[in-house]
Image (cartoon, rainbow over all chains, first blue to last red; front, side, top):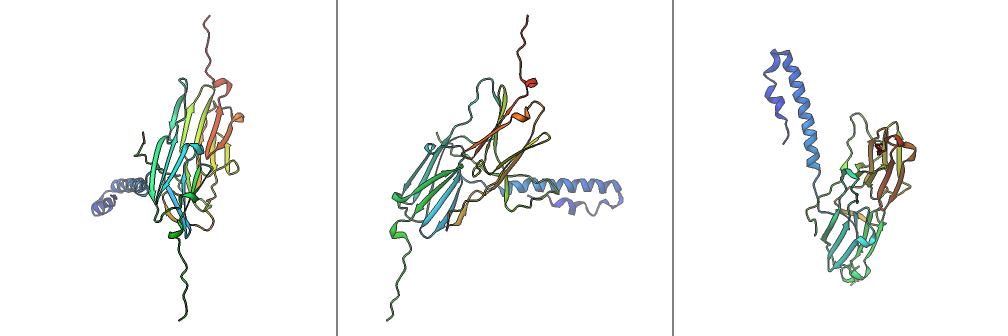
Length: 155
Length: 132
């Protein structure tokens, strides 16, 4: 919802009163601020966690996910048919009794997410890399799903 | 137990009015944990894609700014097909109080997590006073 109606509503009324102009200007500024605030929420569509980016070419796809602070042993990847499942766990920072959080924004816990890719994955040839907190998963297509060049014979 | 409903969204930094970036791309505000410990303050920031050569930590007056440069690593020959998260630099600033011993700040980065240790100045440490 956008608060665009203030202007239309008040325009005809205020000319006799100087103070009203000031008030009207303040209302307009408020409206601008509100619109800005709300537009943030509109832009942030939320996705499941971890979020994946998918890069493709004819041989297969690369899945990437930003999961910083993990060791390779905290990440579990399994592939069945065309479904890829990534399970991971990150522990919260440990604090002792004398220590306290001023802020705790970073995520922690155990998460699992499956996504389907539009082809059968050659699970023997899947490779995974984890660098600087980003997981790269290469999922190659099985031979039979790869594009084939069709020879055209002249009659 | 799985936290199925977890929603994590990268947040872009607010650009102060009248100030614009000249570098292309988005800038995100990294999520941080800040822990007050006995002798220091620990700041931990998630900055995936940043390593020790691509992070800048500056202290100007009493503002500590962390900036992580991210070079998008697109696998060779692949094209983006589907995007759930954006890729961009990271920036966040913190105002320090006088309690911090500025010349002793230490930073490490591992697996995309930046750890800053801000030791407290001698004067600010809690001292137990003995009653005679």
